[in-house]
Length: 179
View (tube, helix red, strand yellow):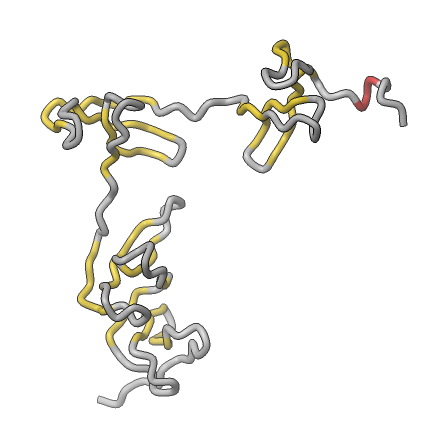
């Protein structure tokens, strides 16, 4: 097939590539459309079509930034709402959501941390060790104190249909206890 066939040409963008001067073309990737150099793979220049800028929803006058004393603001970003410093990009302070529920259940993997309830960026609840990233233990169901009757793993998971072993190798349903 010929490169001169208009059906196979990618749309060109008005600006040239800053690395090599060739025209930029609109390409599509897993995160959506972007601009890329037409001489790819010889030139690997990429530029997003849409910037994911944070928009300020409300400035919190009563809350100063602990790093620079500027006011904090409620912002809407790529992954939803968050609180950050109004002096961004000079100050990168962001309020990280603390674990919504802390349990007294010890992490069965590292034996040093506690399991805490957290929220993923997709809005799903999970429980993970509060020593993350040093310990990467996590479960998707609510942890319960107890020992597996089959493999003696020191943690059980509460699911809709009962208690199950939290060990990935076992995951057996625990027999109901007689009262």
